[in-house]
Length: 95
Figure 1: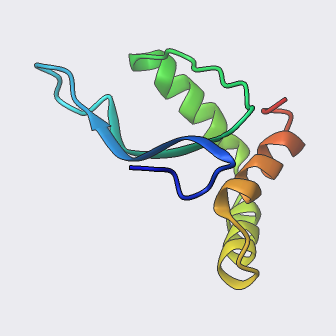
Figure 2 (figure 1 turned 90 degrees about the horizontal axis):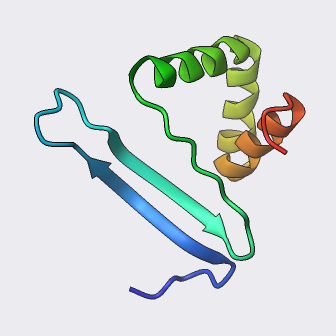
């Protein structure tokens, strides 16, 4: 299927992966767009490492952040990916 947006090099939509014998999926309903010309790094994290990363990320997100994101996406019609990227950059979590 051709990409509708020429600026997007890779688009994954609703991807899931469960390893044989695993109780839960390793990835569930992942959707991702990688813009053309981007450099992307993937971090391999399993078990407690992944929990630690997600715990640290969720600890950084405040109720005020969630409210602001909802306003920006639902009322101002901004792209969720843009809102998230700006927050990650402001928090120093994205280069």
